[in-house]
Amino acid sequence: MIIVCGEALFDVFSDGGTATGFALSARVGGSPFNLAIGLARLGQRPMFFGGLSADMFGRKLADTLQREGVDISGAPRPDAATALVTIDIDVAGVPAYTLYGSQTAERCVTVADLARVPPDAEAIHVGSYCMAVEPVASTLRVLVTRQHGRSLIAFDPNVRLTIQPDREVWTGAIAWMLPMADLLKISDEDIGQLYPGMSPLSFIDMALKAGVALVVVTRGGEGVLAATARLVLELPAVKVDVIDTVGAGDTFQAALLSHLREHGLLTRDALQRLDAPSLHAALGFAGRAAAITCSRRGADMPRLEEVRADG
Image 1 (cartoon, rainbow, N blue to C red):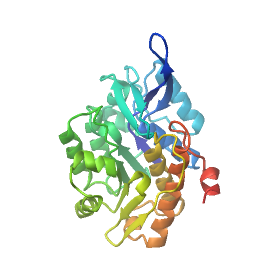
Image 2: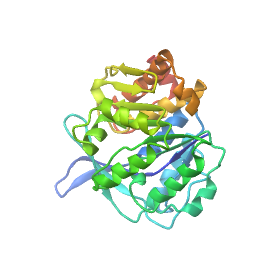
Image 3: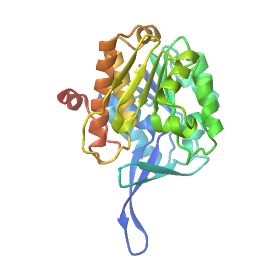
Image 4: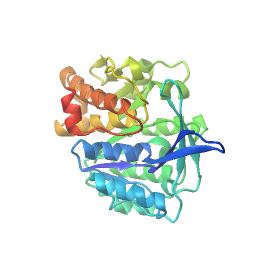
């Protein structure tokens, strides 16, 4: 089982202006929430470990996860509201995020809640802003420490400076995670925000030296760059008419994890021993999945048959 840890929230889009304001469309979202659903749509049976409110938004999030086939039996249910995030899409389809709420359910996950997480999990995925806000960040560090060497640890920083504006918090979280992570996915945009002037190859070198087995850098329209201690591989982006890029990174990570699991490669040892054809196939599958998400509005993750049809 792959356990996805972090936030579930509502993304709020503008459907255009009115005479007195905006017409808004609220959609289920959050990077780990999207990732869990992406895994389920690709044929996996993931578990979601994140705070789910009892308010109307939290109930909808829980219902959606269950309907998609995600196990929420381990999800804490704190007495707190659901976070709302507005998404402002620019002319290039690139989203900007603004969070409303600071004592919300996704943050209110404590060490006591870790008893809900099965210790025999095949893989644990952590990331996004829950690794940069408290108390949930400290809780997830305890979980990662507990599972290190027992489960594959996957990490996607998914930096959101509008939510946690302190860059040192983000770089501190990444520095702590590098020796603990087996698989790290990060975007070139994240690298640029946190490490000005550092190239993707330099970041990859830093991460590998710290102990990561497989480092993947997504670069939007420029494709993807990935490396282990044994090889470096670059793939071009899949050509697609982009509607927006919301959820593209989450889709890529879900597809990468799913492909690795289906091919018996979801262990640290297997990642270290990857050959070029196996890594190429995994990245290609993930890239096709992400391209499908980019071709439609919002984080509408593809199903397995859609990705296979594009292969």
